[in-house]
Length: 300
Image (cartoon, rainbow, N blue to C red):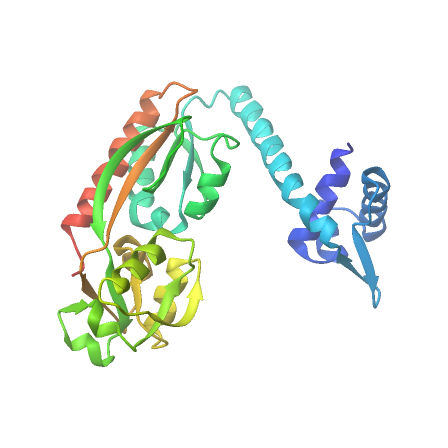
């Protein structure tokens, strides 16, 4: 299958228009259009509908693109690996993690690594926990950071730190005067909640069930950072991972302890199919140290 056609599809799906795709690929719009037309011929099903002189991806195109994205990502990794071998970059680490972890744990560890290892380089792939589960076994990585539960025979799991969820709200919220928020305080309160499939939401729902109540969900998002941001703007209360809350902390936001405790265990994950280098081991140690330091400097 023609790689240039697949790259044209990726550029269009990411950019949203022929003009944007052409700019990303450093080609003209007619050139991109021809690549997409050739790809359409090759796959044998329509990739676009023409609506008011605009190309609109079909449902088949969107389903196909999920596979294309993964294939091209793997190809990009191969190209980068070749470049690292060519330039003798022996200290590169590929990190798979959740977005909020980058600021809470990774940033300081990366800074120290670059000071200790002048040749150190890294690529950080920030994904949701659900995405991490989906990509395990398909993605090339050296070190991952996520939350239990996670069950996979192809990875080695090392528990790192256990933290408790916190309540996030605007500082002038009526409940912000309390040092600790109990789940009973939230009955009837508008909540900004994580999506139902997330660990945080499942634990929160279970906590409400212990008092025979149902959470009053005003807003729902799969992204904990977004939930905290919305709560900080006074749109409800979010019960969040403490690392997420720390990463999203802004003036005017209040963070309080939450009871009964909802505990989340962060883990380091390593692929079983490859040996841990000294650089990976050192980075893991620094991330672990950062996690314990964050707990020691608890916000609540």
